[in-house]
Length: 169
Image 1 (cartoon, one colour):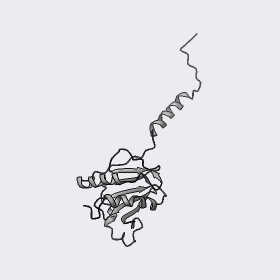
Image 2 (cartoon, one colour):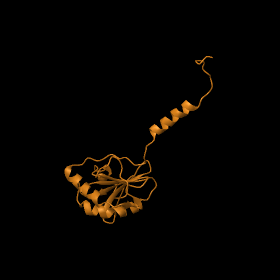
Image 3 (cartoon, one colour):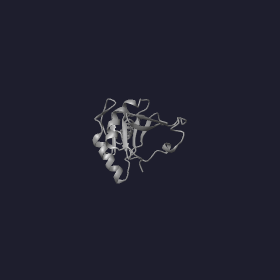
Image 4 (cartoon, helix red, strand yellow):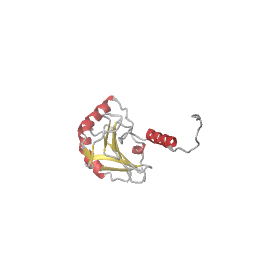
């Protein structure tokens, strides 16, 4: 009997195992969102920490589920996540004279419940909104093809409470 003789039969075991390992390596163990944490100066960081304490538990019917890495400068709700980042840089479009007059199709200015926002539809279908006329810029990203109105209505009281009106540096 020859124990070293190889049988040439197709065994799906190894290719299937390799595929499963590759898929598992590319997928996340959880569905939590990840986001870049802003790095503002000390004054803005303190305002953002105050905002974090004032944020609602639910936004537009979604429960708060903060993104990774955890930070007082970021927050999230639901899945797909509504993402808030506090202390972001001033958006370039805030300096565009076409935005306030409604002549720029890539950005719209407006206000909801006493908070002014710059709305910028993104190429991926999400909507990015950034506060205006506040001492810190707060950016909210709303998932693809979703209405941002309820999100802004729910966030307005917290923004008004924590981020005073004024012009951010």
